[in-house]
Length: 69
Image (cartoon, rainbow, N blue to C red; front, top):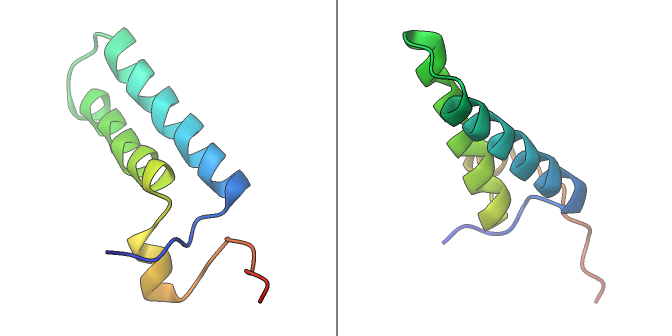
């Protein structure tokens, strides 16, 4: 699969933001586009849990600390 490219702080922030958006989606009983736009929280949640970000891979970015030899 993908190589791990999401580091510790980045990973925690993604999980927190993703969970916050999903909780807001389920708590708020609104209607329309903006209500369902909160489902975008699935993306940072998934990338945080799996530790890999496809966009980071495309751009050649990594927030993981370097492994020492």
